[in-house]
Image 1 (tube, one colour):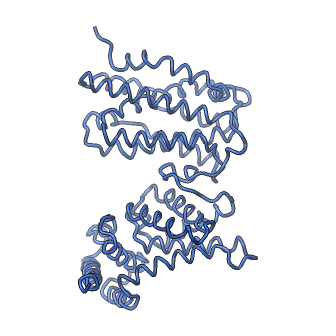
Image 2 (cartoon, rainbow, N blue to C red):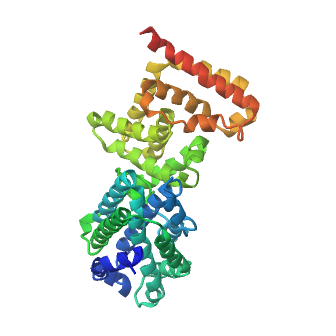
Image 3 (cartoon, one colour):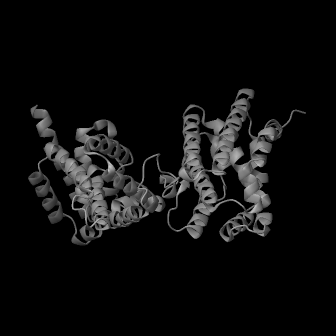
Length: 427
């Protein structure tokens, strides 16, 4: 009788698993000697990987992937809750481990694009390492010198549903797979184990100059982008993030439960523009605008976030009159681009017309929505390739808004489009 898929995985990867067990990181983790910086970075790297799986697998059309993922425990939630309990504010990460994790995620995305089914291999590796952690959890909590926070995290992990692992392997073995598919899964598992070994090897030991704030400390789904290295500025950026969600409810809807995390990482990224020389500002602004537009955030949203970040950062340098001026310059550049597509006076008329037609109570509950809608139309006219329909889906949601609102909203979008199209047609 031929071995099952999981038997093959266990047998072929026994050696690499032993290498992970012999790493200084693993030994320090079990003896309670792991520095807190390594432990927190470990959790953040785990969160980033779980975030990838939880975002991609449930919506994938590959039936085996969806079947295997059904009933999956809330691993990302568990890790994020542990991080919030241990370290409510961001702390520096081991940057070499963060870079290794981001490289791993790039490989996973490439694998997902070319052969989604082969992701079962990396998923098996991540699940098996979680199972190892679960098996060691009670011992971890009793090791003298284990940080209290670490012990609590591993105790929580031990309370997880241990039956899931058995069911997970059973479901894998029940899949009808060709020889080529098995080989692809095995190859994905081997590469994932290699990548995670590199991550854990980088976590400990580390050099002091390897510690820095990373975007992963704010958001496990953040791209690889800079964040302020000054904790005061980082705190100010997070304050601006809270304000942006309050003043632009669309952003809270767009990201839903991930809203605060994305707002934090976006505003932290914006705060780093203040550190750039003027010559480099336009290129970075274009990169930011493109990244946010792809996620459904019109230029007006970016402009308001820049202004809010400036307002929060400025008090941190009261003796420097020119501090963070580049943020206002970036916001004005976005305003200039909008002006080139539709003059401010015309946009103001559109806003006033919408305010007359839309219900007052709904306007009060949704500040900035009309500006965002106009900006979406202008962005689309300026760069049709970056079309994202999230804004109109929200703005024209019959389950959210009244008929009177919907009529006014549709009129705003169509009127803006007609005005914006005229200059292009005239050319």
